[in-house]
Image 1 (cartoon, rainbow, N blue to C red):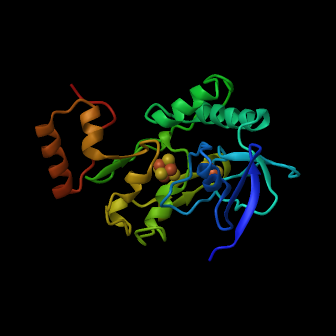
Image 2 (image 1 turned 45 degrees about the vertical axis):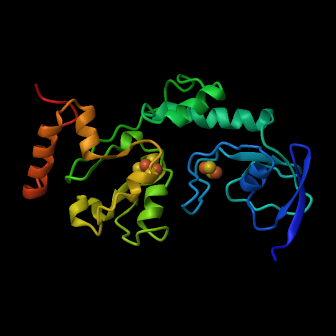
Image 3 (image 1 turned 180 degrees about the horizontal axis):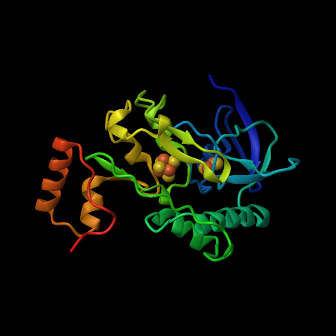
Length: 240
Ligand code: SF4
Ligand code: FES
């Protein structure tokens, strides 16, 4: 039997299993803490920090998706300090990344009153869209570096290890080893990375072509041609 602990969340006493995270314990009493990088089927890495909460006595805010509960904790999930931190994180994301196809993050930004132009001098990430196979495109302009795709491609699901990080600091980006085109890597085109991507940075190629305005017959021909000849698809905009 799992050992129990007692703690307080938003002034409410709760008794729960010792192996729960603060995020899960809060859920038990109906308190929803926002998350972005966290995914229920991926290993949590606490990268985005949107889920931070205040723990009485701790110097810094702590990420609730990875920190486990313990006896006597006193937690606040939505006080002024926490909300300001979340708002600032969202404003930084909005300043650097194309979130136009991330409705959940945009909704969160609205809830926290995050300003789209808070950091007008921030350099936007705008790498070229990568279209190197017939199955899916990679548009890292939309990538928030949540690491989910890397995790599912590795030990969390597929054990293919086709993708990883490249670069450091601001220049960090998801990539393949030696930046090889996907067909030349260990990728098996399972699509798990697309399934967990929260921003549509990874997208099925047929969906991408539909969004560009191509008809389904044209798309079938283009993606078949791609598969047979292993050629590149169209550019970002449809040619007239
Ligand atoms: S491509 Fe998508 S899943 Fe992968 S790190 Fe970027 S946002 Fe996350
Ligand atoms: S959701 Fe916890 S750090 Fe991203």
